[in-house]
Length: 79
Image (tube, rainbow, N blue to C red; front, side):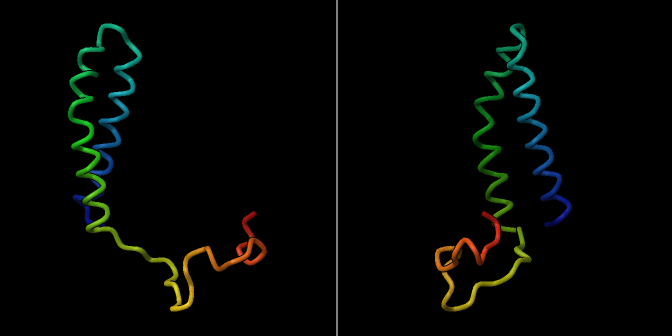
């Protein structure tokens, strides 16, 4: 991801952290309500940016593989 995209993810995460912090105090509840109105837009913008510009560096699936559906638990060695 580009530097701008990382800044966006950190910024939205910090925004949601501040929102949760404002919910804890009674006298800042009106600020939290205002932040609640903008949070879906910010989350959608962040998800769109990550999906558009993000890169997957993991292993590619073969033609006959369908994710984890064709693997047994013993092959995955995770369970």
